Length: 447
Ligand SMILES: [Zn+2]
Image (cartoon, rainbow, N blue to C red; front, side):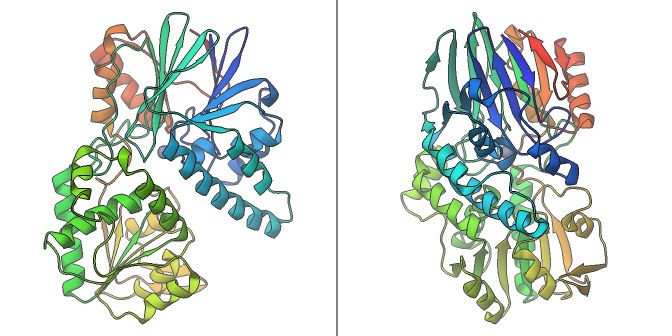
């Protein structure tokens, strides 16, 4: 069998891997490249394989850098099946619809054709089948299974059996201290691992540290009668935080105050989370018997623009969770425009902030910014918590690979900037004595 690396190779986004033997071809993920202009063009390039010849696509999870080119694949002739877990299928629907409407708007502004149309999204969804974790999906010579990856709801590793060898694609590997999800499954008998290495060179705060920090930031801001703004990714981060805040309030750790989820996409994703609560970890499931884990008195969901605008009329203190996670557009900007100049308010950063993003600049302490053409003096407190990351840090990545070491012949490190991959690769070589490869786009390996 051959593995071709067609994305997320020495880069974070664009996850796409082709498996082939003489009879069949399969894809693991078919994601969008998300970065500067160059990447946007790259998304429009023809696939380096014939989509008509792909038998099936196995999807690790519903982040757009793992699913965002599936409708293009369909548009270009793919007619096979798409497999994922049930939550991934349902979350992919809302993520792809949302991203198509954004693409459409941008394409109209730039007077170019969008990457694909809503009809391609709809067609992709008709080809989409769901499978349980552990269920075997068999093709001649190949057998596939999804395993829990603990990254976001429904996220999976893909295990592939072929010619007596076991290959595991981790997809994005979760932070095992997620409050809602089960931890990633342990892999013990893989011969080849194609593994996440996003945080291959950094560590997150621990669970207790992040809880204490969140409690302190809420308390301080509420005492000062300020506004706590939390820019959060719509999928997973918002739901994790909402659950955490629910617990702090209902256990009397912080006072009650008005709180708002001001993101249409996060609200839709929240519905999917509620529908698939059987995928949560055991502690959460037992708490659900006595508590609505995503609701507390004072919480308002504001899907429409009118409802969102009314948040302004609610006197402080209050807390607002809104997208986008890096303050690069979305409703959070309207709140930042209004409250970043207020010394009693706080901006709490809980997500990865790409270099150059407004969120990154705020995190680095910039004192003057421009939002919607208006110059704003930043007087609010800027705080950050790294422990809510949905990704494993280097300790967890190393432990995950270490426990698989017995049968392991080779590790391929992906989904990362080269720096983090090289750091983790050295750690694996020095401590486990296994061969590590950091493939680049277009590399192909026979295994
Ligand atoms: Zn992801």
